[in-house]
Image (cartoon, rainbow, N blue to C red; front, side, top):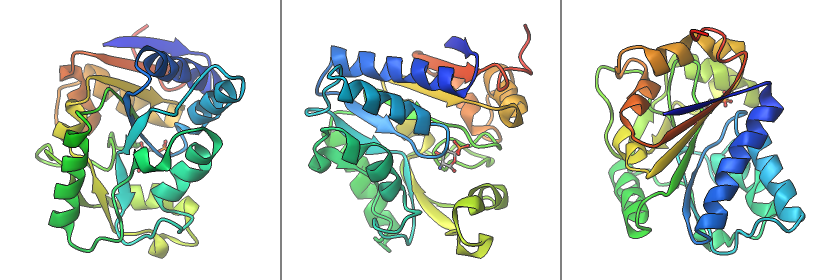
Length: 243
Ligand code: GLP
């Protein structure tokens, strides 16, 4: 595991975008695993900036997103497809046919989760998976549990996640209770993983994830077992780490 300590959120975003651009430059038809949330917004902005300067070409890039709320259509402003379209896809030359987000409108969970795993397998797996981390250590929507979820599955969201995500909805009651998410095994199969974490409110969980026991109660701790992980975190997020 390689750890990059950055000054602040912007610095983290630039460093993370550097890792992603290196991937796209080295393998122009790579498969990027993408994430939503506030953590990657700055990273996407930086990538868009470099694209506009002519330094990046997404024309052959393929993407798979980690997760999607169950029950939200793509044009719902809170759906993760909508997020991806507005924060990245529409600003760069990625072919929308090459982008994949779980279909939140498929009511049959087994069908959708099976389909999504096949999409990833047919693409030949993920070259670089970008991850944020929830306050409780969740990655994708893999919430703390007694076991690690394996492949793409339907998740019942933790109360704390509903609380954390309600800021984007009219009220907590409007936050969907379920989501489709890649499983821990799906994430761990990515050839390279880039975890970005910012803010003091995540410092304690990040310390547990990187230095504590590997446990499904802190889902991000599984990353200690992956052999190619880059963590880019700002000073605030690293404030609980030994100096
Ligand atoms: C959501 C997403 C995760 C994300 C997490 C953290 O629940 N499903 O993929 O990493 O929130 O979000 P943020 O970056 O806004 O703190």
